[in-house]
Image (cartoon, one colour):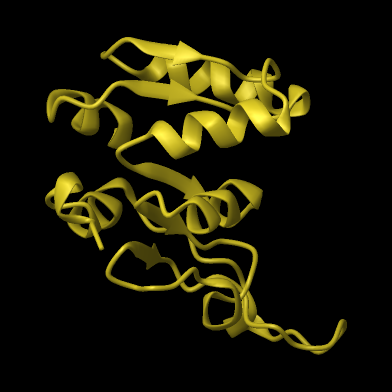
Length: 137
């Protein structure tokens, strides 16, 4: 698991999400061997931004958390699943790394099989984060 590897590298793991995602976050926490602080459903937008700003690295999917990390300048790895990384990946690319093909932006109803979401596996994500502290400006 990505979080366990980062914990072994000395990073403290904080799990966040919306109230609707708490069951998923709980499953993640239970699957981990390392301890994690579960703040799912407990943070305001401002509190989430403060957590992200103080983080050494943010690993997230293609969601608002990735945009906060980019805006705050916090190094990040963004796993693209449901949106187009060519349009939405944060920059600069040496500080914000992206993985996953995502789904390219096309008009509704014009998606093809190649537009299906991609799901990078754990090893692919870990390869991108080979040295989590090397993701810097």
